[in-house]
Length: 424
Image (tube, rainbow, N blue to C red; front, side, top):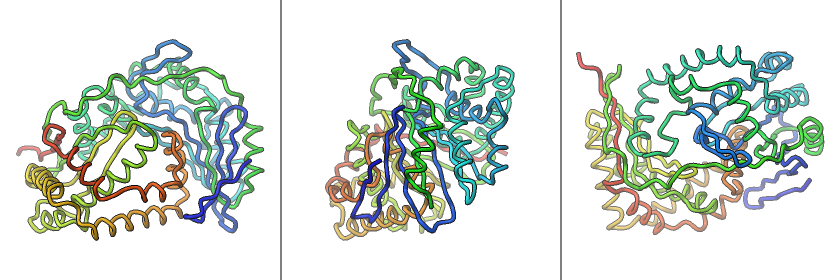
């Protein structure tokens, strides 16, 4: 076990990589009542094509999410019921890039951790149970399809990306999940739930050495197979179609706007680009930006408007979401404001203020067990150290933001998705 210190943050954690390849990080918080364990695998909805020991595997959209649902089935019963008996509050989620399982408790931590370790390392997929789950997940997908917020985002991704798997929602489609079988779930578990492809993060009033020894005893050896992901050819920076529309039960139009950015070429570049992208979003149309005030006063946006940056393997984008009676005017205003900023330059005082504000939010996030564990695992899977972000902030300049806006906010890289009210 080694200790890693981050002097600028006043933080540290203990780390050990087990013989089976599992990486464990423990942040001791003496005096805290709550204990939290977060087990993640580097496997998300984007991982639909891969080589397993040299054999090509292609899976339907939604298989990672389907697998997450079925992992709670164990030979001895349902893991959720086991957590409940131990007063453990648990859940799981699948994102485009990760699947994670977690439990929070004040007592019986060792027992809750045992259940967590058991459920992620035990594939138990009975054909009849897998078949029964199909209807449950199909109902969940239909619920997303009936949600304007989900539909407007998924329509945007399909309009922007030619072949990247982010084109399809995390849960897949009602049609795609019909192809998922117990054998397919076993294959994906073997490929991506190997301890060497996973990470455990624990926070609370725990003893790091005791946690590590428990995990060492209760996790299996690595299968030592080789898994290679395939995200297909590189995406062009042009969009599939600049505009997509639909009609749903909404009181006023809701929109999603995206500008395609060039994906990062290295883990370090990805971390740095995230900071640049977030700052660019704040400067362009964050709540303290002149454009936000202008659009709000013109009643083109309301307080639900948001702008941000998203990136993962093979993609990156600047994005904006909100409600507006004239979404096209919002898109035009974003393009014009980006051009103005590029021409006149980012105001340095504004840049320094926003940079300090963003760094302050990251510092406050260190109080969130959930946020720290999620970011720790996500950054590790990307190949970087989350708690190194203060040093990365130091390298970002206003010129970086100007260059990002110049390259990214272009008409050929833009797409807009709009959900209009149903016609009467």
